[in-house]
Length: 140
Image 1 (spheres, rainbow, N blue to C red):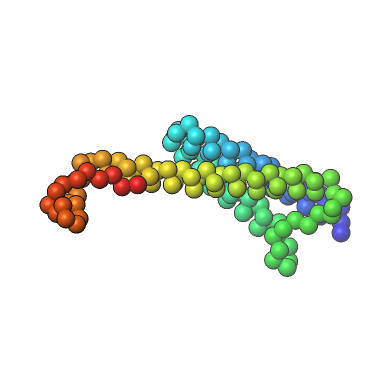
Image 2 (image 1 turned 120 degrees about the horizontal axis):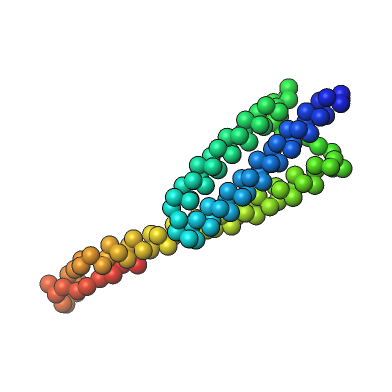
């Protein structure tokens, strides 16, 4: 392998590493926006995540070798290998937390919407021996 191809591979690895780290920062920013109920910040972060994901996809496709493999192969003792492994582990951890936040937020929003729709004064007829009596109901 020539020195220029190794340098090019290293540059691609550094670029992808920077994008992955930026993506992790955006995931953290999105979680903060959710906890602060800052819709505009969340929307900005989601847009930035889309841009970063597109940049990462482009960077990976530019590094694609003849076999069609778009991963950058680095030896275990390469100076960037540990940084890449650490960034990947950090991003996976952040992604798990982000997924949990989104699932819980979605569930909470559904519960609140259900509660609010029930508080619109919807009366239901009772069943059983007390037919035609109106009762207040609150769905959960």
